[in-house]
Length: 115
Image (cartoon, rainbow, N blue to C red; front, side, top):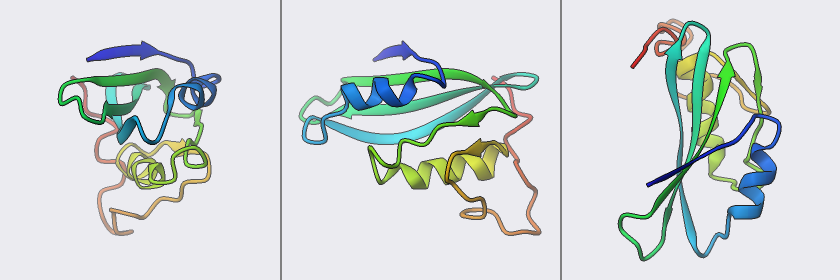
């Protein structure tokens, strides 16, 4: 596994220059609550035909930051982006909330979790 640090400002460019749809499988976007008001956003890929080659792009964000969408680069990312919105209560460009949580559910249940 290799982790590559990016910023919210350059994550789209970094992923676009890296991603080859026939070489890399987009797995998910993950969030990890690190400290009060800090979230590590992870864009995770695995290489086809290589069981243990994983690359994680990651950026640190405040909960109030706008997280850029990569759905125009990787259309299936919209599901992971909406999950991030529901679970952490963040704003991801072009991603609505309400995919996993009903209105009467506990909102942003992972926003206070820390490793």
